[in-house]
Image (cartoon, rainbow, N blue to C red; front, side, top):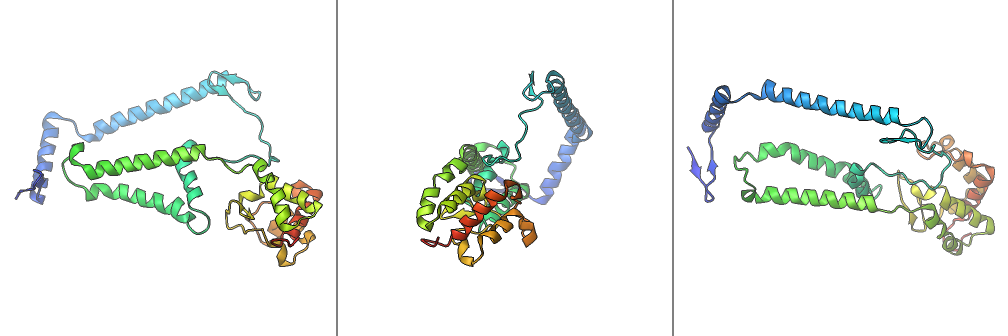
Length: 281
């Protein structure tokens, strides 16, 4: 039985769905070609062509470029400048197709809501995409008669585009910008001269990538705020030892800074010891 809706759409019974499917199979046998193996064969051939193009471009890139860094060929150099493991100013950024997730991390802060932004929202969107064919089973495919689907698609495209743009243009807090805060830290904490030197090193070597200090920095991986860490009663030597090798103290997340040298570690320890809150140093 077919029921006419106000807009002329039809509610089709299960019997009619089976009849449509049977007629489709008959039409395929008489006038068309089935999906398997014809369409799958075409997809396989096209996939092979794409792979061959990628391999060919890789060969052109490799054999036309030189072995020296910066010696570019037709498609660019084989090697760029060597990585500097001692850099303190490099800010890692994802590939462009992850910029929307990258910017979500700036909206959803650790640890309260970062799981929602990085796992929850993408998972919910993927589940909705998977169940959509089972929810919307109408035969109507004209855009003007599918306002909900069109609006949802436009919202998704707009949100992805905006997040990608914001992620591409987002500026991270660089070491130079952090160093400008040292004078303010010194006034608030009452730092000594060596404490100021340690604060400058603290701002330069990337500690604010995970820790926060007097409102500056980004909390990541559960790293604590260090504004009043000196109030714990630990000495500068104890702080230096901890920073040199956190793994010895059970912290397997924080990297070791032993390579920075004894003098840098000593000044960092003094800075952390004097960080006792307003006027505490």
